[in-house]
Image (cartoon, rainbow, N blue to C red; front, top):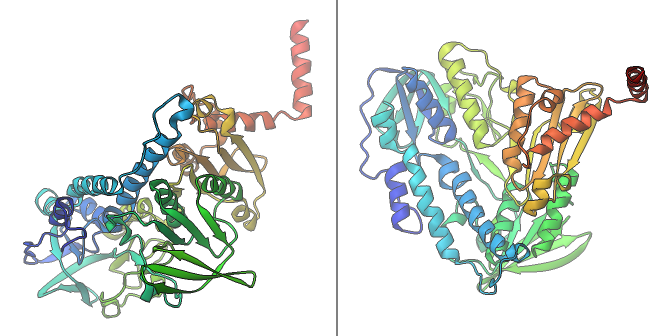
Amino acid sequence: MPLYPDTEENRVLSANVHPQDWINPEPSGRYNLVVVGGGTAGLVCAAGAAGLGAKVALIERHLLGGDCLNVGCVPSKGMIRASRAVFDARSSGGFGVRGLDGVYCDFAAAMERMRRLRAGISGHDSARRFRDELGVDVFLGEGKFTGAESIEVGDRRLRFARAAVCTGARAAAPPIPGLAEAGYLTNETVFSLTTLPPRLAVIGAGPIGCELAQAFARFGSRVTLIERGTQILGREDRDAAAILREAFLREGINLELGVKINGVESRGAEKLLHLERDGFAFDLPAESILVGIGRAPNLEGLGLEAAGVVFDKTGVKVSDTLQTSNRRVYAAGDICSTHKFTHMADAQARMLIANALFKGRQKNSALTVPWCTYTDPEVAHVGMYPADAEAQGIQVATLTVPLAELDRAVLDGEAEGFARVHLKKGTDRILGATIVARHAGEMINELSLAISSGLGISAIGRTIHPYPTQGEAIKKLADAYNRSRLTPRVKTLLAAWLRWQRG
């Protein structure tokens, strides 16, 4: 299964995740678990179940590792890291670094690095590792259910006690007239580029659009980010989005917010996007278009009807325990989840093993799900927003610590951002939190642990944090909570006690 471009790195990747000489095994009796789809959810299901002694089959029609390894988390973060290195080099004059006039980005070299690292990581997801080290029967090809307890791959018929549908989702462009004819990039094709687009129009200012818009701008593309809404990262904290918006503007990203795309047409090597805002029409030229919105579940060809599995255009329908309408069939990951993150797919896969094979009753609704948009600064969140809590009749108290109050953030030149926590009013119970910082994705984990473990902000306040670190922001939130408890009455009582001590 060739990958573009045809390089040594991509040949190594292909040999690991879809070897051309692969021979599917002969099914040997009834499997404890047949996993359909070899992305994050499927691989975790297969490896975890096999590690517990289950007889497992894994079916993948394309590339093992799924979106995360091949066209998602791994290549995007490799690209983002390279673009950050370029930005840091150009910005290092403030730290006393000189001789920066000749700094530029070799885009082809940056992409070669990404492909090389991706190929190295791919060994962990390789077909041979799952077969030889983990004892999983790996079938490469189209899997199609033929009944409530059986599935076919080519001329092989597999019987199962339980099955897991983990086929994920794919990029799906919006229905914009002329877009398909003009041609466009998605997360599934953008990492195959070998030359930098001079002008790039990015459709959608959600996480994918924002991450890649900033990366390409730092590489040297003239980037325009197009969003129908009036805010980038429309689902995130407004203050967080505002900070990122200002960062984008400083870096030269053109923001077209609150616009409608009426159509796209090609004019030679150029693509012309016909935009409209408040009734005013205007055109935007670009050499390349990147679509960063829209996902569609991978349902085609699975034969779910034959298995009695209910689904719709959003994916496979599951209960809170991830069970489908067929009691023998479960699902995990993007095919059934509203939170389409690799770490969510991993968590659901672990839950699926417990529930499907060991009669567990773990609930999807009980999971605490953090997420992070890997821009610079990063925007991370976990738990509820105030509106979510108020919709449930919960009163909220919000505390915020600006990064400018952290010595380490100031010294690092990364004082733009904040840590914010939402508490149940009158208590120290953490409902949710947002962090905007260069390493927000690392910092949010402490608050995720607190929420999932039922620890209040006071427990964090009793935890010693190293100085100087940006993680101190979480400790300062706890300090702010403790100060909020010092009501006038409490202060009066404390003052009286201290006067008595003085005699």
